[in-house]
Image (tube, rainbow, N blue to C red; front, side):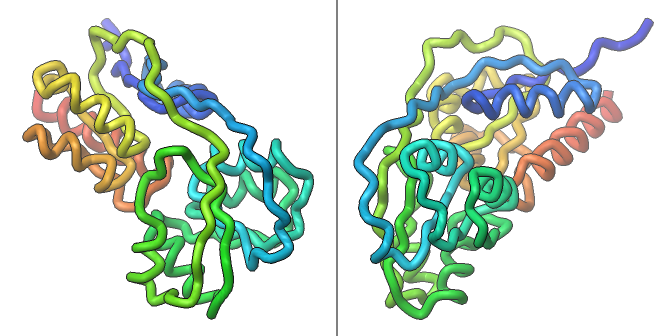
Amino acid sequence: MTAAPPRIWITRAEPGASRTAARLRDMGFEPIIAPLLAIENLTPPVPDLTPFTALAFTSLNGVAAFAALTRERDRPVFAVGDATAQAARDAGFAEVRSASGDLHALARLIGSELSDGVVLVPQAETPAGDFDAALVLAGARNVSIQPLIVYRAGRTPVAAPTEFDAVLIHSPRAAHILAEQGAPRLSHAITACISPAAAAPLVALGLTPAVAQTPDEATLLTILKAALGKRDAAV
């Protein structure tokens, strides 16, 4: 008898959840889409971009929301990771640099490229981290940021699955929501997190999640596969 494929709970918001599900199916897993968050694009007035030295995107959602608000594409772009950078290029931005990392990597890239100036950051209503502090740590003391709130990630009423073998965590916000549900329902499953920040709320519960060495989905899915393999070997 062929063993049933591992069931993987995807907690990230759409449309990313469906993209993740497709990758999991290609890997032979059974995805369960039950997002803990839902994305709502906002419509703030976009300031004149002329005074800004560059734009900085910290997420795919920020790119999509901002691109829908303006046709201007002439500002240089700094992106937190390769997927976000590609989304910016797909949206029509020509000059795009990727930090290939997290918020601190993005701050270091900006600090290495800019000696001063103001960077516009289209971001979530609840940002994932302190960008100002990251810039200071990176030594970019003459670079400042101006946030532009272009989307919010709100909790969803979607019921969590009752049976799953592993859960994917793509953000600290989702991890906090999951942690509120308590450790017992997660004790039987593998938890795979995209970054140490996303793992922290689960570590606080006494869990030991697998954590991607670089904050991108390809690495996240690699550690998920490895963790599932170790579990099967132990059995």
